[in-house]
Image 1 (cartoon, rainbow, N blue to C red):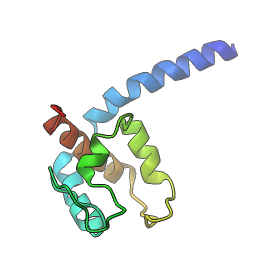
Image 2: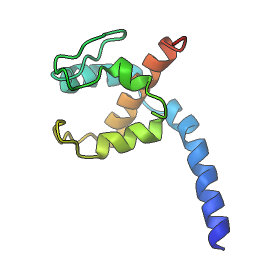
Image 3: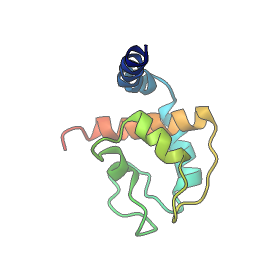
Length: 110
């Protein structure tokens, strides 16, 4: 029974990124990033330097290996030393994830 539960959980988790990529609004995610995140992060496509030198650009985040929609969701909900505790709704989180996915898609040739 436990083995079946684990296999089912793994199967669901492996499908989740595909479903998550369909959710969210890219434009709303970009607007939210510009209004909430741009104080520290460069959020524009192709930006190479963030206002805060310790904050990666959104383009860098989008292209980090293993940065799946689930990983981004966990990352946004986790406390970070140098990142303020920003509380995003599920829709806002989905929108930011959609925006990051669009950056990855636009720069897929990397």
